[in-house]
Image (cartoon, helix red, strand yellow):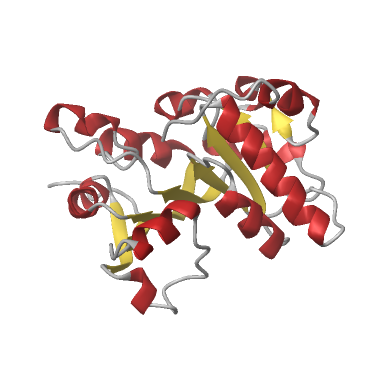
Length: 225
């Protein structure tokens, strides 16, 4: 998703208490940032932050990290988080934002971070075959997430794209994940998870596009005899 340059974004992020500009310095030490040691969840590609702002305020029992590569997106996410917490007169104390290229995510996370859940929402489907390796759910990426996702840790994924979803089901299994549940129509499954509707999700549903979703769990690879 393209977004116009916002000159205020970088200065606001640098001044924010919940933005990390040097994520590589926290590799293996992300938990030390938070006031309390709680389950740690990660959103990859947070965009404007509508998802993470609502998720974090709804679940104070969990700590969150949200990543994106674009300053303008992160600036909007920062403002959305502040607005959500401001509505309940609460300090932002369980979420951090950072800017980084997700393809290089192993530069900023390792097994010591003990990430318990990863959220991937409406990532770029990269429909052309030669670009499939850029997908955030491709096996090349899933292998990286396995490095810092706790044993039995989970990935929650949703998309509007049929081909991406179908291929991702294979990617997860091939990479040693167990599909806990899946749906081809998230709206019809209110019990599927504690869903927070994103801006993209609402737009797609208004167009009559069904949202696909899955929950996958990290398993040990089976050793072939």
